[in-house]
Amino acid sequence: MPSANLESMDDHATSSEVAEAKQALRVLEDSLRDCSRCGLCKGRSQMVFGAGHPRAQLLFVGEGPGFHEDRQGVPFVGQAGKLLNELLEGIGLTRSDVYIGNVVKCRPPENRDPTPDEIAACSPFLMEQIAIIRPRVVCTLGRFATKLLADTNLSMTAVRGKAKARELAGVDTIVFPVFHPAAALYTPANRRVLVEDFAKLRRLLDRGLEALNPPVSGEGAGDGSGGEKSDDGSGDVGSPNPSGGPRLPVPRTEQLPLW
Image 1 (cartoon, helix red, strand yellow):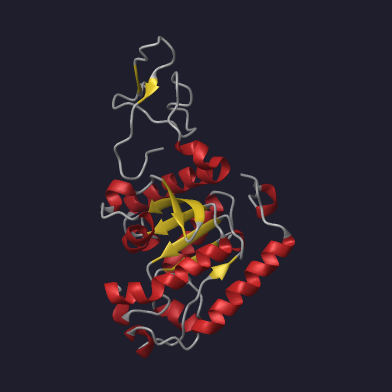
Image 2 (image 1 turned 90 degrees about the vertical axis):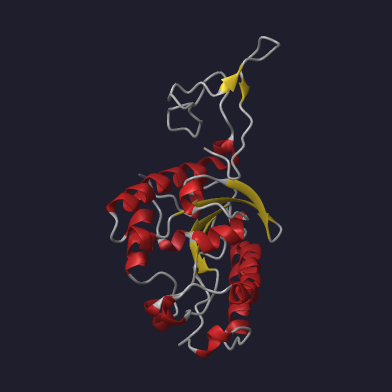
C-alpha cells in the first residue's frame, strides 16, 4: 500500500497552519504540566499530553496513560502501542502521520478506570486539542473515549467498526470506534477484528462522509466500497421507489451509522 502522508491527502493543512497548530499545542501542553484539577495529579510521574502531527487528519483517543506512558510521557508506548504501530503500518500510516491522545492525561492508580469526575476535569483539554488539530477522523480506542466522543452508551461490540458524523469542539469530524489495542494482545479474535476495522478506517480517511452514504441501485454494495449489505448478503438494501426510480435507501436506525 502506498504511503498515505498528509501531502497526499485532500484538504491538507498549509505549512503556516501546521506551524500555528504546533505552537498552540505547545502552549496548551505547557499550561498543563503542573495541572492539579483532579486527584490523578497526586500519583503521576508526569502528565502525558499527546503526540503526533499537529494538523493530523486522523486523531486517536485512548483512555489514559499506563505505566510505561507515565514514565516516558508519551502515549501508547507499551505493548498496546506496538500493536497500534503495526495496525497503522497495515494501512500505510505511521505515528508521524497521526496524532495520539487520551481522555485523561495522567495515569489512574494501578491502571484503574478513570472516574467521571476525572474525565470531566480533563476532557475539556482534549476538546481544545481537537479544536487545534482539526482532524478529519477521530478514532476512539475503547469504551471511555467512545462514550465521551461518540455520545453513546452502547457497548463496544455494538458500535465498533461503525462511524458517526459529529461536531466536536466546533470541528466537523467523523468518530470511528474500535476496540482498544490492549483488548487484542491476548485474544487473537479481537486482533482480527481490529485489522478489519483499520481497513475500514483507511477507506474512511480516503472517502470521508461519502463512505457513510448508503448505495443506490445496488452500487457499491458488497464490493468493499463502504456500502451496506442486506441480511442475506445480497446488497439489496433499498425499498421500492413509488416513482419507479432507483430503490430508496433504508432509513438507518443505528445510533452509529453502518458503513
